[in-house]
Length: 303
Image 1: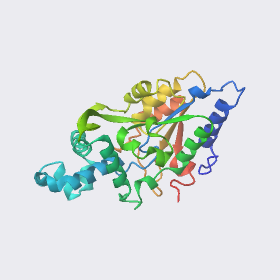
Image 2: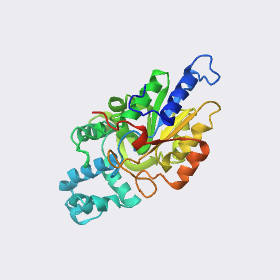
Image 3: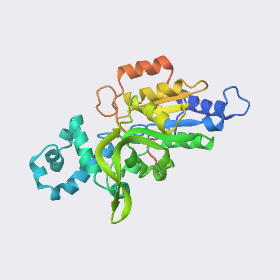
Image 4: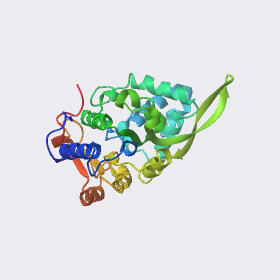
């Protein structure tokens, strides 16, 4: 198991956890109905630099809508997007990002939005790796998912990214069905289109699945405390804390991006996937596993 992992404390801890919690007769045995593991997505399961994949999708959607909105050529933040200035885009304010997301994600049915995501993923190419985004999945983490599933664990994605966006590809990409995806969510409205009932996406936020929002959403959607949690940034801290308070054997893991050659190197100074000094101290204090992409992974992406 875990063939893409180098031998070391991280690999050993994962295997020991699975063995201890699924071996009948073990004092740390966890019953099937309680074997729940949660994974962040961006930066934990796939590449999140130089900006989040979903934001690339939003940018390309705005560009495709620009012809019908000529006033955008002189109106920010659309002007910067149309000009393709990635450096300026990386420095967008939260309000500008929300504005772009709202315009690109709303006023379509849920099914139409899913079709848009499928179409985009089939042709969009990452600016550095020159591959489709669904080819930039971390092979070592896929192996962890498979190992857990093979031992009776139910796997959920719990992401700050958009729930409907991730649900469009989660089963094909990760083997995780759409009903096991929890993410940030916009409001929808039940209405009719050509006499057919539909759910229409609205440019309004329902909830943000990040930081304290993650355990709150886990409680809302799953109704049980997970026994294992995997993340990579400050936004995942509360989710890991929540899983550690499970009364029994538990596992917490953080992916540290420290491989500038094969992927990226970033932590405290990055706006995307911030891994702050305070998170590092919290991880060390609680004995969470910190995975070095450089040292713990033989490969990052599958061939």
